[in-house]
Image (cartoon, rainbow, N blue to C red; front, side):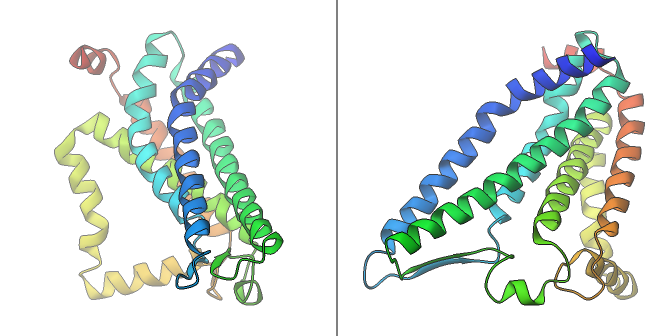
Length: 237
């Protein structure tokens, strides 16, 4: 089991090294460009309170494709479904931690440049800084980690659902949430529940994310347990 987990994590690493590295390289050049442009007297640029938003968007699209690009191939190599799932949970936590750490390294690094060179036209402010720090109802670092992990598990689950049931049922699954918002009573309840995930709201609690995470783990296991690998690999070739 331990050997299989190591093999799967190595496969995850090889699979994700280039896209993750490319994302952070592009993001670095984007921030650098904004910083350089802000040196012009007529330009003032700011990124306020949403420093982790780009990496969250990346996690969503990356996770959607992860299942079909990892699951059938590691299983074909002799990795058990249980070892695959455990590896996915470990990888999801490590990737989320890595993304959050890099986000805050970038945040502090670019703020250091702003302070050292006294740049006035560039504001790069995280949730843990400025006026946000005074109205947070929880720890910003933990919040970012839980959001990234929840997004990874949720969209890996959705990617697995597409893989298991096909495009039509996958689209129906994705459409259920926004369509349900059109029903006033349901929409109101959903908004109320989402308040428990909003770090600025008095209802916020990190435990709410654990419900999402555990639900994704259980449903994802059910999908993996029933998913065909041979058929999917045959179709791809």
